[in-house]
Length: 252
Picture 1 (cartoon, helix red, strand yellow):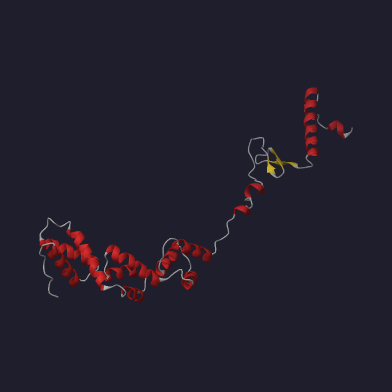
Picture 2 (cartoon, helix red, strand yellow):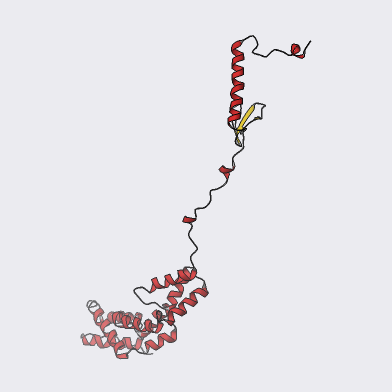
């Protein structure tokens, strides 16, 4: 007796339709394997069911679950677009641009410009080098700035030397540089500016008594930087010119 006689018959034996279906499935699987050049593999799933994988990506098992594998293309970030990359700005180029923008339309002191560069986080060595260079070529000139500032604020706002010195200090002008510019103020011009201030303010004090008017006028001149002696002298003279009597200056 041959071995074939003891082999159990296939499940579809006796039923031609089952045999055709089994043969068709087996043939289709073989053809697909030849077309993909062995790219498809059959692996056992977690529950024993067959899982078909294609090109390294898991397919679905008979239970409808996917394998946890992922392709490298899904996890690797795309390369950066060189066309959209912005080069780092040179600190010296940035600082020079800031200085030129600040000096456009009006002069500024070295102190003001240095403070501006500091707020933009420009390194100190870069700021110092550029500020020195701008001074060499005349773009920064604290002496000229001080004279220009005094020439506009003293007659325009009626400020005295003390008030002008405080403003120049806030602008970053060195005290010695400011003093040289302030020494050019003519005392007669300073007194004339004080008289103009008093005359203008006096027109609004017609309904107050002379003592109150004196206090207000002297206080105004003090805020403008005038010494108390000059302030009382100017106010007294202007009140008398207006046929009013003011207070005498207090003893020093």
